Image 1 (spheres, rainbow, N blue to C red):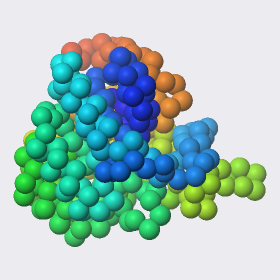
Image 2 (cartoon, helix red, strand yellow):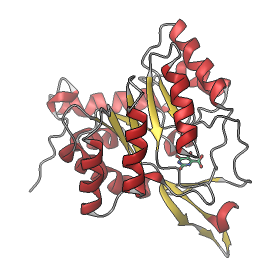
Image 3 (spheres, rainbow, N blue to C red):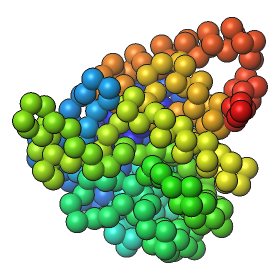
Image 4 (cartoon, helix red, strand yellow):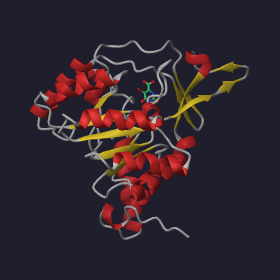
Length: 292
Ligand code: RRO
């Protein structure tokens, strides 16, 4: 599937995704009111990935709720709806409306947008994350997972896993972009917002993404699925995410570069690797990384 943010903001982009070879799709992270986002240039393709500081541009909660409900009418119940309120109250308001609607899909609560000036990434504040999940699961009963920022310290993995294991979280998506990096071309930053600081995706982040998938696969309850995200360009990258424990992968940077034909390419490349190894199903190798 796409990662939230990649070609999933407008009706046209969502239409293209729903008619692609992707297993499913997720909508752009939304806020209650539409947002313009940060000034441009705010997304730049780099040789080994991308840098972005989009700033959560979106068409507003009602647009995406209408879209996912329409998708249910055409038989698509496995759709993902990304929510990224700027405050806990905003998340509660949106999730209350989702709870009370006919929505039958899956919410991905984004706890990790790195690009809102003045707003910290919730996933890096463990106490706050616990409070957010506590308040949300007090009333929200439909399937919900969280999109996490990348972690780099083994104790942080343990602290986050301990929190998540207390709640009926259905999945975690690892990882959002590596936040607040700086890319320079000649003498200039390449994006405008925040002095050139932005989230990095693509090949640069794959080893970090795999480590996050692996650690959460080991530390989380077995009924919490892992969605791998970060550096998927080929079927081999998909294979490695699954080997680390992912049940599914999301694609952002390479989807931006290549467009929706990427999904059928990845599927056939993955199938080729599987048949060369005589694997018939994802379960034959999921999580089975050989550790020396
Ligand atoms: O819109 C963005 O700037 C953005 C978001 Br919400 C996110 O979760 N991750 C990202 O890299 N960019």
